[in-house]
Length: 211
View 1: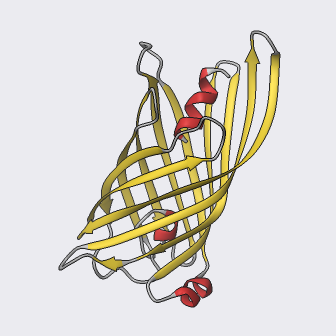
View 2: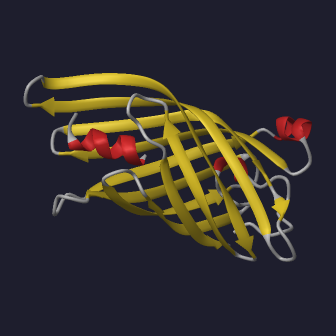
View 3: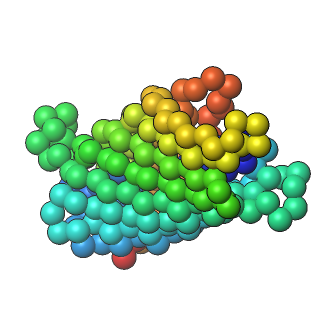
């Protein structure tokens, strides 16, 4: 499979008093009418990858985010590919209340898109996120989250052997992590794994501010 497909397959501030309505279930530590701005670095095998991301939690159950990741092959010069990402989440407060105090539950849908010449790959994970806001000590908040999802990946490739090639794959995957919040600042780690043959988990680190 060509380079664009490999990139997408590999790639694709909480405080101590964060209210239960914060959508940490989507991986962002915001409450209503708050933004986050941050950066991330991921470590897929054989690639260098870094990116920026921003999110906004609207007044109500809806939150959204966008980002840009740049991935490059460690062994090939000038191999950078830009991966555009975005997503929406819809909080389900009744489910969160049923599970426990401070728990956040939401439906989550992402999209990751990369295009190189005649090749295009789109990946859309659709899942259910769960998160919680915990105290990790005076002035420090701990916010773990986990998002199991169905990963829908569509390939449109110009293969030198197969010619024009189009296919859609459906795989189960999971993304999760935890954020430590220090006032308006947050930092944390994340792991993502799509359960396909020969795929390894992808680890990453994140940091940013909440406004």
